[in-house]
Amino acid sequence: MKNSFSKIMVVAVMLLSTSINAQIKNAKTESVKIYGNCGMCETNIEKAGNIKKIANVDWNQDTQMATLTYDATKTNQDEILKRIALVGYDSDKFLAPDDVYDNLHGCCQYDRVAKVAVKEETKADAAIENHNNHGNHSETTTNVIQNENQLKAVFDNYFLLKDALITSDGTKVAATSKELLTAVNNVKMDKLDMETHMVWMKVVNLIKEDAEHIADTKDVKHQRDHFTTLSKDIYTLIKAAKYEVPVYFQFCPMYNDGKGANWLSKENAVKNPYYGSMMLTCGKTVETIK
Image 1 (tube, helix red, strand yellow):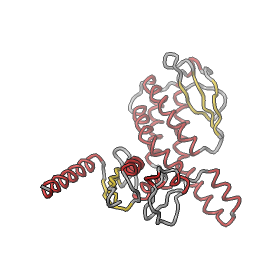
Image 2 (cartoon, helix red, strand yellow):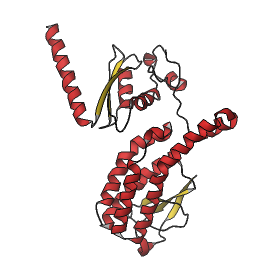
Image 3 (cartoon, helix red, strand yellow):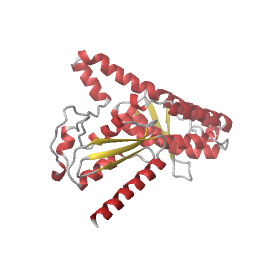
Image 4 (cartoon, helix red, strand yellow):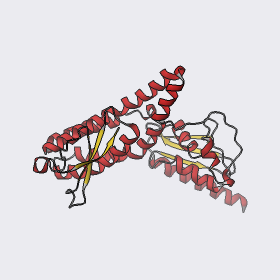
């Protein structure tokens, strides 16, 4: 009976693995050790590591071994393990931040053996570290510059798209959105700092979807509808990554049957992309992002 059950479990695991590989393009599978204790750990580890159609983590409580299956063109083992470390779970490569580990439920606090912690460094942290430790000036500056260089083209093309919508020229808007899509596809996410990387992974597919919709039509109304959701995700991204000059988050109360819609601009003066010349100055600045 035990042998029959074991065979059934093996077949089930193989079928699950096949299903996962079918969903993830360019699938690469690896096994790594991730430290944890219980079913709660399993839930936390897999939730942190999984990204729909990009990465899947299957962690075994008994062996503490995790099977990582991921699209090798979009992520890698280190990035998956970093995300898992940032919710409290060590691997042989990355140690969770002490405060995050300390906040785990008591049953989840495993024996720690790794040595080097993963730090979710913000730009403010980098600036303080740079001020206090001139020896690390070059490394810190390089990280910030790489991050800014990766996303500058995305933000620049978003602003050009906003300007094109002001003209209400659907052909121009579509062409500009194609340039935005190219900029998004050219981002090397392994060059982003950890904070920005985590946000990027949440919004990149949504940004691509809206940019594709805008690029595939010359219907300005349809383009503007997708610009509303695109702007929400660009806002989330620019809050994490920042931009070289102050950016103004603006709001039109009239659009979408009075529900309103936001957009981002490099100018504080309102030029409404949802109505163009019809109601060019309708709206106001609701936040300045520096």
